Image (cartoon, rainbow, N blue to C red; front, side):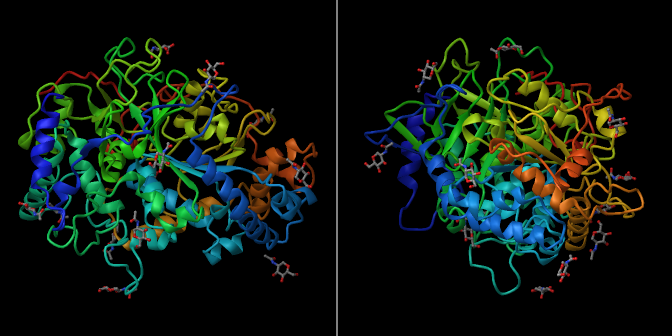
Length: 640
Ligand SMILES: *[C@@H]1O[C@H](CO)[C@@H](O)[C@H](O)[C@H]1NC(C)=O
Ligand SMILES: *[C@@H]1O[C@H](CO)[C@@H](O)[C@H](O)[C@H]1NC(C)=O
Ligand SMILES: *[C@@H]1O[C@H](CO)[C@@H](O)[C@H](O)[C@H]1NC(C)=O
Ligand SMILES: *[C@@H]1O[C@H](CO)[C@@H](O)[C@H](O)[C@H]1NC(C)=O
Ligand SMILES: *[C@@H]1O[C@H](CO)[C@@H](O)[C@H](O)[C@H]1NC(C)=O
Ligand SMILES: *[C@@H]1O[C@H](CO)[C@@H](O)[C@H](O)[C@H]1NC(C)=O
Ligand SMILES: *[C@@H]1O[C@H](CO)[C@@H](O)[C@H](O)[C@H]1NC(C)=O
Ligand SMILES: *[C@@H]1O[C@H](CO)[C@@H](O)[C@H](O)[C@H]1NC(C)=O
Ligand SMILES: *[C@@H]1O[C@H](CO)[C@@H](O)[C@H](O)[C@H]1NC(C)=O
Ligand SMILES: *[C@@H]1O[C@H](CO)[C@@H](O)[C@H](O)[C@H]1NC(C)=O
Ligand SMILES: *[C@@H]1O[C@H](CO)[C@@H](O)[C@H](O)[C@H]1NC(C)=O
Ligand SMILES: *[C@@H]1O[C@H](CO)[C@@H](O)[C@H](O)[C@H]1NC(C)=O
């Protein structure tokens, strides 16, 4: 690949007019230029517990947020909790209120949204909606305001679509995020909603209209031509990314989805462009992180799955890299595509491509050539392969020039690779993006883990991802402190831990406390909608999912089976939010917080395994969208 690189780049640059508007293909083409004089490609992130550091830009974001945004956000949240009239121990109010705000020791809260395709995006939106201070029902329920008090939010696969679209669209309400701004209020070229009438992951995207679908395929193929001609491998992820861009980036509405004359549909919009979004500039939105897995060749690939030792990468507004100890390094995201310190690439980090990578669950279907050809990824592969045949390129992973060549050689599995081969953030079985929130330097006290992965054949969650996250975290105990959770999904199911919010790590203040909220079943008394495996849906359906998720997110765990809802839940949630701060300040847990913890904390009792899935392992293959990224056998025969 490399020999073509510069020749084509020069050719292409010559044809781009700086005056006329760019086509989508031009805007999607990475550019080459000499690096800035003070350029540094790799930042070592140090060693957890010794000298681990965040990027200076992230540290600045978080400290400004803590100083300027969180004090009033937590005060509003406290007021909403107090509005439910449950008597709180005084420490809850003093931690959330002004006394802790004065010395900046407010809780640091992160929220993680799992994979699970559009279902996970919708379910995640429903949870955020129930925590949103702008939603009067959530305020009344006593849960509203916690969204504004989050410091971090992470997403992978289906979860990455909501996390990134929320950030780039300037942090609207969930209604406006999903449906687009109300009539008459849209900004031209701005946010247009999730365009859920058209397919997000599956081809064809436009139902049975074969003419429209064929036209659309040729648009997508044309849009990645510039990148190909510039010498970069293009795979199904590039085409998928252009479709993802029409759902989750500015510039596309349901009305202009197929029109390539008036919009370039997010081509040229970089992942790092969120740096300039007003609510990011003002530190109002939580700091967003997107997770992507690596498929690394080498000793640990034995022809069957992404081993947990493979690096989990994170993408944030400033950097891409990993705190996994065998790498512990980052590269500046706006120069992604760069592999040395003299020639710098910009424009590689197309937001659609990055979110497309996090959604590349198709790679997990690669059990054999015949499975790939029969699988949902095949139309995407044919589309790209039809225009740009590339022998020796694996068409079902994304290729990122490796900025970390030579870093920690012997320890970092991809130190010798020209490209990182990246894929769905859930393909290793850790389908809730907990890893970035466990990073010690982030000092996160509480993690809200939102699980909408389809662990069962009917699309419900039963804790598989928590089991797998624990397995991986325990490989790196000094890097990723993790509370004790069940080692099998049978315990989740038989104890109902997936049916109501469950707290993990209540009595071990050396790890973050996890508040687990799963899509484990329909809201009591309602028909099943939150297990949808649909790749398209209408507004009525979206509202039904939001409404049920609201119930699941606010019902709590009634102490009494005759109640449908725990009236103490808002207080219990606040008790969990402050609990690590309470411990640090040497205060005893008391009052309603004691009874809440007795009810909501997992008590450590495991049951015997009753199903074959998820014994510290991975879920079996579900219907195409139900799995949303759980790992499968990968045989990686080169197909082309
Ligand atoms: C590099 O220099 C530019 C100006 O030439 C400056 O804006 C930037 O902050 C510098 N970056 C670093 C990492 O020092
Ligand atoms: C961090 O500490 C490790 C181990 O003590 C050391 O090898 C490394 O050089 C240090 N890194 C930085 C950036 O200070
Ligand atoms: C809480 O108490 C206030 C004052 O007594 C009352 O106005 C309000 O309706 C109560 N709220 C709830 C949710 O019971
Ligand atoms: C912050 O203030 C609270 C309330 O006065 C106190 O309990 C806590 O110890 C202080 N924390 C720090 C880190 O100074
Ligand atoms: C917005 O406009 C569309 C057509 O332009 C119409 O179908 C829809 O009902 C309108 N929605 C509202 C909430 O007015
Ligand atoms: C997307 O559009 C919204 C307005 O709808 C704007 O506030 C936001 O900054 C835009 N995002 C980017 C990345 O340009
Ligand atoms: C597509 O065609 C099939 C078979 O004719 C039909 O069952 C299906 O409902 C159609 N789908 C749409 C979205 O029109
Ligand atoms: C629009 O898409 C068609 C393929 O359907 C392609 O031939 C054409 O070049 C595209 N136009 C622009 C401006 O990108
Ligand atoms: C391979 O896996 C083992 C066990 O999980 C791990 O210790 C080792 O570091 C891995 N090797 C590489 C090169 O990742
Ligand atoms: C959703 O769950 C219900 C009840 O468990 C089941 O009947 C239905 O088939 C499931 N839907 C999907 C798409 O799996
Ligand atoms: C823990 O909880 C489970 C399920 O709620 C219950 O069956 C078990 O008896 C409890 N164990 C203890 C030690 O309280
Ligand atoms: C919306 O979608 C649901 C479920 O797919 C379907 O039953 C319903 O008829 C649709 N409603 C409209 C207004 O199209």
